[in-house]
Length: 377
Image 1 (cartoon, helix red, strand yellow):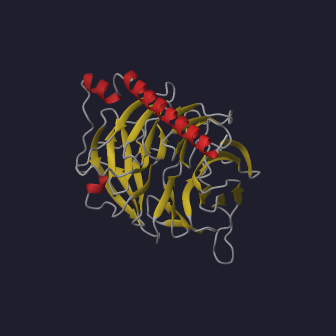
Image 2 (tube, one colour; image 1 turned 45 degrees about the vertical axis):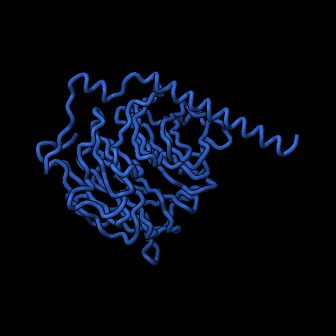
């Protein structure tokens, strides 16, 4: 068979696949006779309302000299770790704004960071394709730097995201530009399982984000540049449990809903979506129309402790607060006078749900606290 014939057959096969994909998309739309917001409105539900003191910026954490790319809270709520383009991790006391650690990294190109469940260690990864672990109780070296406790090497692409398995300081999951996710045994530094890669049910492009189910820590979801999210069982690495379609751009962020039965996504297509892991169905789309049709990509998302609110950070500096039940944007933190001056690159909620932290390319982090008549939503 000639090269020309092979190309012709490849083009025909590609066209067939695209036609089938469109048919599947239309079939899914026909099956979705309603969404969460439509049902909620039919039941007479009303949106959450925000007064001027209900969510306010109470602290600005200044100390990084480069863009902030990632942040994470400790389970006990009062400490935050942040990773920046300046090549440092900073551990903050969220109550006092004081820095407790400033860790100079072996590779300045860091993209992600995470606290261990005990709060004794932090992990980070980036363009060096390595996930580095630091024990915060270790002695510093002569130059005052905290030494690397463990280096998890094995990815063949950048490390885009990392998260410790809940209640386990010894296991961690990473995602990578090599199209895989990996479960690591930190004690040995070895890979326990690889998700994707040579397996056909894996992602077909860079994996950008992961989220471990807080209700069932053996399940996690991943988001990718292939416009899909995939559900994985850590006990069965050979194939994804389910693949979720709907986005038309990179899935930049994924986050489990508090009940563990649903998860949210944020995408370069400018939308956030809510999916059900049991049925595989898309439950809701969160989208704010813009007059100029230039919809900013969603970079990071987080749910409030009840799940009623979805926080979404955008490349234009907006941070929308969505009512998940009615799919209505109820507040834009980016419009407030003390908001960030650049894109919201990361955000996260404290363990008790009382505060939101946002990180930005303006080099700062901001802590937003619930006040007024409500402490937690």
